[in-house]
Amino acid sequence: MESIRAYRFRVYPDARRQREIDEQIELARFLYNKLLERAKEEYLKDRNLQITKSTFNRFMKEIVKGNAELNRLYSQALQNVFVRLQRAYQNFFRRVREKRSGKKTNVGFPRFKKYGRYSSITYPQFGFSIESKTKRHNRIDVLRVSKIGTMRMEMHREIVGKTLTLTIKRDGDEYYAIVSASSESTAQKIENANPVGIDLGLMNRENIMGNFAVLSDGAKIKKPDFAKMQEKRISHWQKVVARRHKGSRRREKARERLHDAWRKVNRQNDDFAKKTANDLVRSGHTSFAVEALHIQNMLKNHRLARSINGAAWNRFIQVLSYKAEDAGMRIIPVDPRDTTRMCSACGAVRAIPLGERTYSCAVCGLRVDRDINAARNILHRSTAGHAGIQARGDPASLHPETDAKAGPSKREHTFGPGNPGLKGSPGL
Ligand SMILES: [Zn+2]
Image (tube, rainbow, N blue to C red; front, side):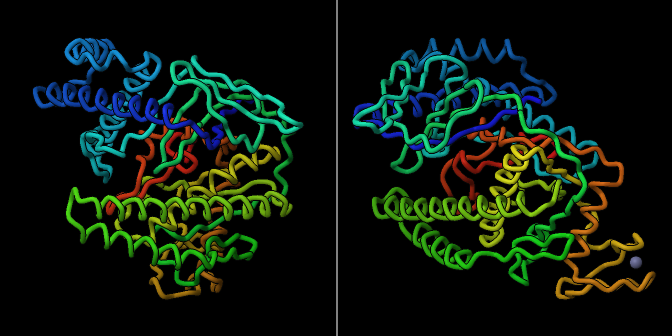
């Protein structure tokens, strides 16, 4: 089975190449906004009109014609701007359709990208290569990008399979290369003899007990101690940013500090996710059922604690997905409805208040920890004839801009490409 995985490596462009990358990003953002403006005009004329690929293409030609500086944008990066906008546009119309069919969903026209909200360029196919040199017995990896030049790359793991795309991303004052590659999964499928359900109880309620996850076998994974610290640091810098005058240098400084704080959160979440996923894959369980939730919504949650939890949760699922895949195991997303309210023994549904730690069933008499009850329901749904999907790497990482905007802000907390939403993942 073919799977696509994204690898994120830090790169070290020199000052000249940094300027080059920054300029390319800004040109791409400019084009994106111009194209969106045109699309919006058309949309306001006729709200049912879906703009076709060829119309977008025509808009793009017109815009490039009227803005000579866009000739400096590399053709590969230019093509990708178009792809990103089209994806945003399709998502928008999908949500409109969902809303019409009665689903509760927020539908907003794709937004213009402010400075810092569009922070990468993508080479969809060609124009880059990765080379390794040996210098005094040390291996040095170099990324060569057409028109930009070469830069040292910190390649902490080997790329497996055929490389597909390259995205160069700016994150504060750091630069990253995100390489996607496809490969045939060679892992032997193992028999699903010991499945487990995982309740990540972060979505609909406060995490009273400080558990990061609870398993259907009763095991509890504690929330790391750093979570509280993270929250304090971020909320501090958010307040400072809000207090300072828009456009002022002092506000910019504070924004950088806020960005650093988020970056630190992402790193810590990353380490925690890797360790936890490793433990789980080695625990003897053979598949992992989780609720298929709308992670994007959670990431955009206005409440800081939840968006931090959301980030950790999201990263964990990604890492678990690819580690499970490597081991020939599956992640199985299940319908999240009533997992907390349903009795895992007899299927009766009852309301359970937030503070109630024990689920007790009036029908069959079951008494069990509420999170374990939820995890058991999740497990049942994965085994009761529900078709699972093969776990995958994090294909969502291939589209860092549309799936996760760069840079934190007061309302939307989003994450670098190592940590985007799971929109692109099958079933999740
Ligand atoms: Zn019952």
